[in-house]
Picture (cartoon, rainbow, N blue to C red):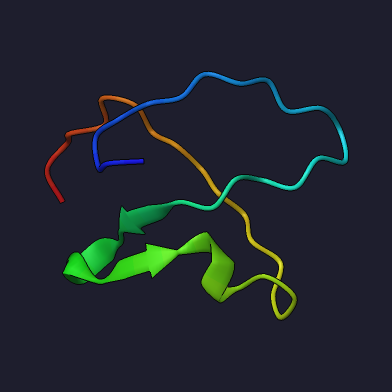
Length: 53
């Protein structure tokens, strides 16, 4: 799926999260599949949290 495109689906308890890539702190791009099978991932969203550092 192209960057910026969205797909609506509903996950159920126990479903595997779909793969995605985001820009992390410092501009590094991180893909969920990089961690699959090796680390637990905790993902937190802060919508509209554009406060100064």
